[in-house]
Amino acid sequence: MLPLIVNFTGRKVLVIGGGEIGMRKAASFVAEGALVTVLTKEVLASPPQGVAEVLLREYRPGDLEGFLFVVAATGDKAVNDLIEKEAQDLATLINVVDDLERGDTYFAALHRQGDVIVAVSTSGAAPAFAQWIRSEIARLLPSNLGEAAKTLQAERNALHAAGITTEGRDWKPAIAAALASSADAASNVAERK
Image (cartoon, rainbow, N blue to C red; front, side, top):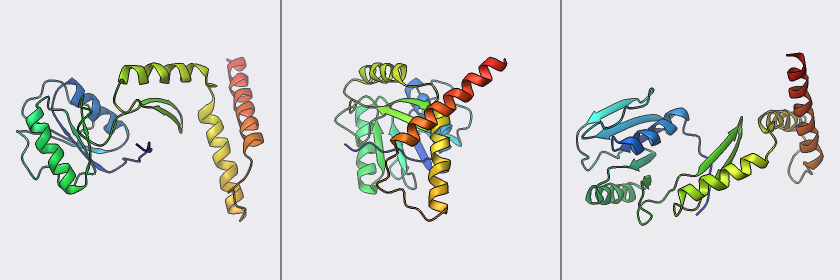
């Protein structure tokens, strides 16, 4: 397994299944700017706002064509088998909900602060445990990671603009300074209120 952060903005995602889990997965992709289609024979939960399309019918071979990512949340093993087979044939990434034996991706438990994303996975074995680990890590992190990341991005961009490589650079002093300066800024704003 190799954890990756993927930019889904404008990319096509298909969620097959109209229950709570399928709609929750659809919502997470919509929040990331994906163009989400939900395919379901029955809508059992409200589709999230921003879904591009809801198709009310059963899955048919050929439905995965053109999608970067597919979530199979049908609750029907035989249908999920067909969906997974098509995904493999098309080299399309797939998550088969609640089935460790199928699919090639798992959802991670996420903690976000601005551009900083901390992801924890148990490779699908124990999602609740991944969420607990994520919460414990989040509790230990400074609350200004997003602001510090923006400061460090600006510094990195300035170095690149000056023709200076950042490869092999010791970023520890810059990280400490960015965390301290964004913490000071947050403290100053709080004091003014």
